[in-house]
Image (cartoon, rainbow, N blue to C red; front, side):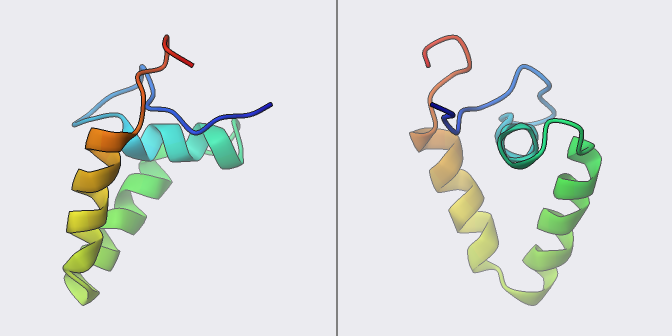
Length: 63
């Protein structure tokens, strides 16, 4: 069973890389990071969602 976790490939908290690995392991995490930044300009609640995910998601070794 696949589980959404943070990633070892961290820039801030590993959330974007974890999302990238969960949906498509071949997807570059940079694309997801750029998507988060663009969405933050249109809707600042995305930043709050990122912070919540950074707190809630388990570390990669815990899963």
